[in-house]
Image (tube, rainbow, N blue to C red; front, top):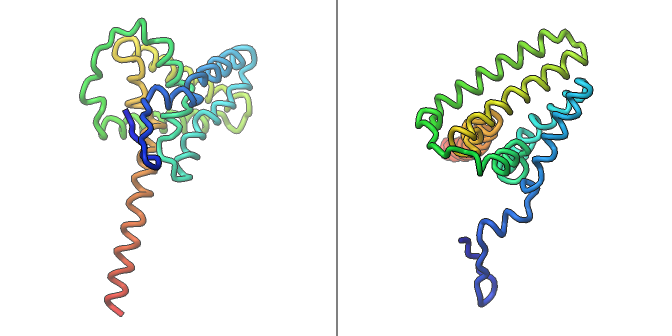
Length: 188
């Protein structure tokens, strides 16, 4: 329960009330549409760049993991459709570690870079690489959601981890520059 002071009184809001207004309630439609369009014409796979780029853009704008919380179509799908069939086991602790997330981010980044390189600039091959990458991670997310909790993929998601790393860099950057300014001011 969240409490927001407003004048003399307090407005009580639950997390469910807040989530009712976020696109994550319906954004699962986007990922289903993406896969259907790509199945009819692989060139639609290039739209995967939107799914992969949007969280990074949010993070670069200083919004942190807002994409994960409010918009993510994959997270929306996993949360909506796997809740009733998930076995609900806890995710193994090692999967939540920074080392595992860094490793997964590097692995997927490397595989994706090779796929882009091997497309040779051909639009259809590039679109196919995006589609394949999105499809494989979607299937892994579903399998994790069935075995563990529905949105277990969200814990290890390379895009979510990348946004967290960007946020940490942004938070640390002003502290470094402020400290260096203070040192410089004392030296003068």
